[in-house]
Each structure stands twice: as C-alpha cells, then as structure tokens.
Image 1 (tube, rainbow, N blue to C red):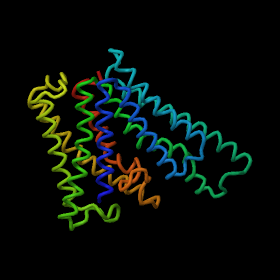
Image 2: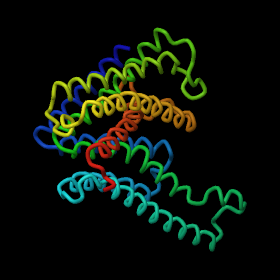
Image 3: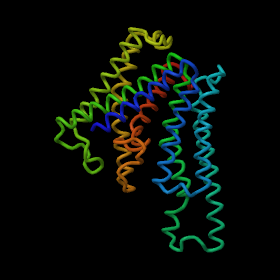
Image 4: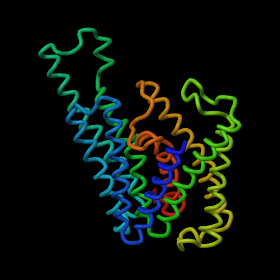
Length: 310
C-alpha cells in the first residue's frame, strides 16, 4: 500500500509538472505524451508477440510521430482547425492498406513455395493476422492516447482545462473505486474478468467522476481558472451539460477501460503489462482507463467548440 501510494504521488507530480510546462511550450507535453505512447507500444508488442515482425514494428514506431505532426500542425492552419480527426482516420486507413497488401503478397509467395498451413481452416484463421493485430494496437492504445496531443494543441486555456479534466476524472474515479471498494465491496462486479472489482467500487467510482466534473464546472466556468475563452463563452446550461457529461461518461469509460485491459491480460495470461511503476505495473496498467477518457474529452471538445464536420 505504501509503495503504491508513493509511486502514485510521483506519477501525479510528473503529470502536473509536464502540464505546467505548457506555459513555456506545448511541445513539452507532446514529448510526455509520446513517452507514454511508446511505453504502451513496447508493452503491447511484447504481450502480443508482434515485436519480432519488422514491418509492424516500423509502422507502429512511425505512427505516433504522424499523430504528433497532425495535431501540432493542423491547428496552425485556420481552415483546417478542428479537422485533425479526419486526417487521423485517413492515416489509419493508409496503414491498414499497406499492411494488408504486404501480408497478402507474403502469403501468396508462401503458397507458391508450400510454406503455408495445409489445413484450409487454419489457413483462413491465420489470414491477415499481423494486419489485424497491428491495426488493433494502432487504435488501442496509440490513437486513443494520441488524442492527448490533440487536446494539447486546442489552445493554451482550453488545453489546460481538457488535460486537467482527463487526469482529474481518471484519478478520482480510480481512487474512489479503490478506497470504497476495499471498505464496502462485497459483491463482485465482473469476477471472471477482474476479481477485485466490486459493485460498490463501481458506484463510488461514478461519484468520484461526478465530483471531478462538478469541480471542473466551478473552477473553470464560474471561477474562470486558466481563462479559457471557449469555456467562459458557453451558456450556463451548456457548461453544466458539458462538465456533467465529462464526469459521468468519463467515469464510465475509465472503469470500462480498466475492464478491457483486465480482459486482455487474462486472455494472454499476464498479471500486469509491465513493472516500471512499483505497485502500479506498467504504462498500460496506469493509462488503461485514462485513454478512453482522453478520447471522450477530445471528441466532446471538437463537437462543442470546433464543429469539426463543418
């Protein structure tokens, strides 16, 4: 417990420090985000045994840099502001096409020299496995975490609000779920996936997320912290709706992300994705819920403030 608490405080200080460095340049937080993304990629590669496939490894190394370029450069062009998501989807489709063509060619060559599975059923099951696995990892966790850089480049004030809300919702959900789950939790929520999750923990996790949303409304809208013009310009009902949605849906997604990661770990037979953080596991173990909350904040901010489809 002590080790977990100390590590948690160190992680909190690092997050707060790199968030504060946005006052100097947003690229500090981009670098912080890329460290997290590459840490998660290494863990996912070793977990799914894709690390020995050179083509997949190359694409997975280049893709986060492409995300950085999109999110850092697009906001500088007024006509493209808010349209980064469209290019991200196009880049993903391009990666899928390249991987698929490459794997189909390789399979065709193997068929001709007789190196493929003889059993037709096994042959069909193995078809495009590398492509499917690689694209899955490019989406989860890479793109979901990449939206941290998207929020970072939405402007100084709005970026601060988005990043702080992501960390606050995720952390308060986890803390409330952990503490009250240990104290009051008797009924298991999903024992076949994560035996430590309880119904009481889930309920109080929602309470934590809602408190985070309420604090965000008070500090960023009523008190005007960080002076985000986009937030301050909202009508009261819209601001309440936005922060309540962030708190409630963000808490739901944080807990769902935790269950998704637990399901993957159970499927591949590991307890933690890594051990770099004493008492907390690896990068993936710390951001499994945060990445879904990040995606929510990014999409809601696009819809409310940028109307990216226009």
